Length: 135
Image 1 (spheres, rainbow, N blue to C red):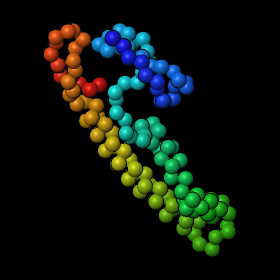
Image 2: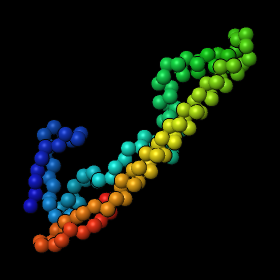
Image 3: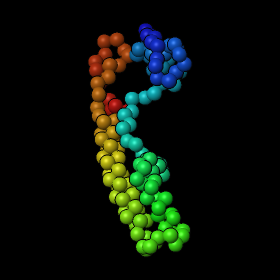
Image 4: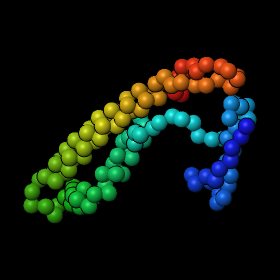
């Protein structure tokens, strides 16, 4: 049997998605998303640049970055060239470490959730529930 429903997940307006119960071959014809849970913000490859991008959405970080560049590039400062750059770099580094640790915990929680055992009813009539991995 099959069921159709209107999807609001970015498909075209009014597009009907069909799900075929107990028919893996029919469902494989469609490119539906899987059941994998992902709550983490970063990957190994995107962490550094995406984190810096997010940190420079804060006005204070942009302000101190501009002041640091002016101090490093010119002799406009009555203080040392690194008076503003060093604290800014420290704040960015500490925030990056904190965000990295929090995202690492999210990755671990996602892995735990995605490796849980769930009950599955096989397509054969009269079959009993079986335990399978979530993924």
